[in-house]
Amino acid sequence: GAVVSQHPSWVICKSGTSVKIECRSLDFQATTMFWYRQFPKQSLMLMATSNEGSKATYEQGVEKDKFLINHASLTLSTLTVTSAHPEDSSFYICSALQGRYEQYFGPGTRLTVT
Amino acid sequence: GQQLNQSPQSMFIQEGEDVSMNCTSSSIFNTWLWYKQDPGEGPVLLIALYKAGELTSNGRLTAQFGITRKDSFLNISASIPSDVGIYFCAGLGTSYDKVIFGPGTSLSVIP
Image 1 (cartoon, rainbow over the protein chains, first blue to last red):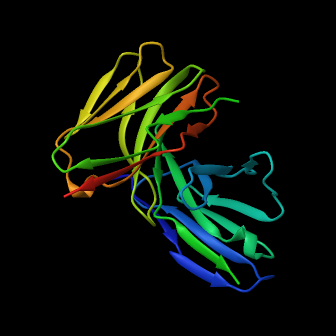
Image 2 (cartoon, one colour; image 1 turned 90 degrees about the horizontal axis):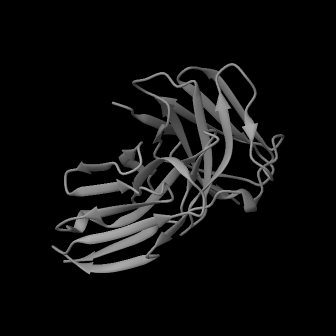
């Protein structure tokens, strides 16, 4: 149980284009999902908390107009990187909250912006 | 804000040896979570701890929630090559709003 998927696993896009990443909880419902960003050899950096049916809560320093989050259902949250630039290249990981405190992570999406 | 420190930063051990790593903070945490991340993958939850003093095992892994609520340790017994990865501790602070991750401990196992 507690399986979270992400799609795509990796994506290469040109500078200026937008990319959408999907996060799904496969065997449980998640009213709360989280989006993280991870640079090589570093820890996870929380970008935003996604709540089903309401606006996402962004961490300080994260541009909400650049990283659009939509939590349309109890099993799906999407992160759209708008007008991507090379500095947006990173490993993006989502997690879904099950119970009160346990987060289960997706396998991550490697984004490369050329 | 609340921060977590992990030590050691990295470790190299021989297969079969036991491993111990810890996670500390100057702040109190209400929940401790230990995750393992393989390269290019998302973190996998290993153990969750909810009460001060709690000792929990998951196979060869044992973790404890420190009685001061400011630390936690993770032990791995009889290490094997597939234990290689980065181990993150994570804590839920007193405001219960979000989980904070430590910087990670990188484990390498020499066959």
